[in-house]
Length: 336
Image (cartoon, rainbow, N blue to C red; front, side, top):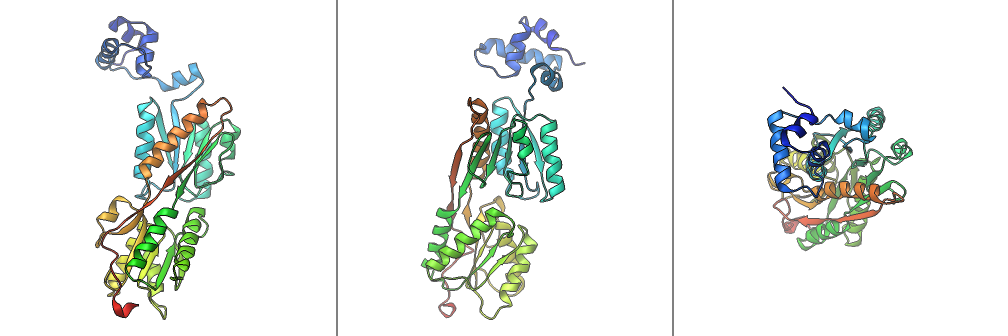
């Protein structure tokens, strides 16, 4: 049978306030007292009543984290970084995924307000500041990713793809490639558009103006369809740059089905360095994004907004790098 906090305090020989401080991981409690209280909590099978705490304090212990889709392997490391940082400070996480659906996104914004989250990190480009305006209007801080500059109640984390893209282009140039194609992410996603533009301008500046630039969604089957279109054209590339690793894996699969050897005939470069990139056949050369660090930074940015007197957010930047694996190789001489 579960017991009340008062019973825990009585059995541990401490005050109710001391039990509360221990359960909320408040400093300045001796290790001996902390250990005794936690042992009593375990013996009494005591659980905090978060709803009662919300009524008494006017605040929840929840922070929101909004992603695009739970099945996308881009997000688990972000979730891990955000959740671990929240838990280490005594908070819980309300995880929501939009599935790229506008009505679902609106419902998520309502859910975050109804649960009175202390703040919300929105790490998907499928949600912009306007869609989340009701949250800031209610005084709930936001941290966005690759969005507008920071302001009142809003922080922004920019992923700088420039360094990784620059290294990737230099890498294929050094391998002798002169014919490139780009399969970018969806045209209604501002991060995908920024990556596409950086790839096209960077390749063009190095004399590798892409033979074609295509767009598709961030899924394996879309990458496969897009690369089939690339192969149907009169001139085929010796290297294909993809808007993310899932697109790249789909492209490699379709190339293999078409009898095109990767990387001997066509090299492939992805973006994100998801866990499966190293397990692909061949292992994928890709531009790495520090996603766990992104999750940690998102939570810390929210906490900083809450602690500041004016509740202003800040701008943060995370860099990218190139991870070279076996999906890129020197171009064949007859492939110049």
